[in-house]
Image 1 (cartoon, helix red, strand yellow):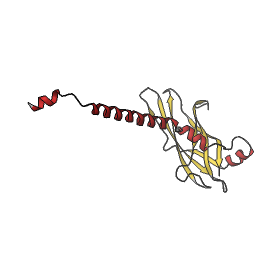
Image 2 (tube, rainbow, N blue to C red):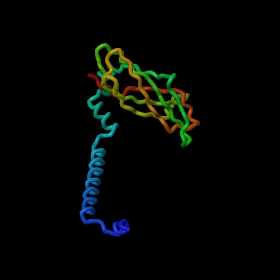
Image 3 (spheres, rainbow, N blue to C red):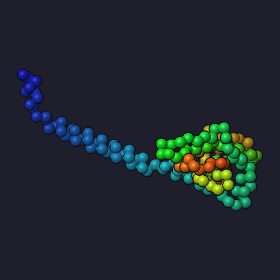
Image 4 (cartoon, rainbow, N blue to C red):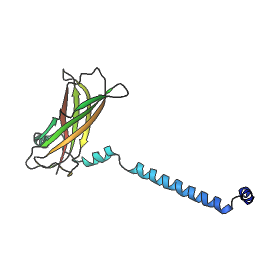
Length: 170
């Protein structure tokens, strides 16, 4: 019987106040986390900051660009169908710094998939930042992986072209 009496008792006023205090603190913590996440730069913005001040078209760019080799890694490049009925390509390449005196800290590369008549089907510009040691020293090689999607099954994906559009050196 005693348990029935406790069941019918009304909660104390102090427990309601404690509930509201905890609820407000919880809302403030969640709002703080959301604000923190929205003020952080996105990956793309971070990469743009890393390549800021890079060399672009011009004599100095051309001199350095001649010593950068970007090549397909045909053995790793693959394609697969998606649930939307399109094709996704996983494109692998290698970047070689053939320079003897310049250390590369960032590159902007345009990757273009072309058909048999060399007409572009899709292209994507990516910023490549060396990951292991934060730079690509002379004579070093770095792998690059790019995902491109939205190809139609009827597209003739004959070749892949790589073009360096910006170089940041140390």
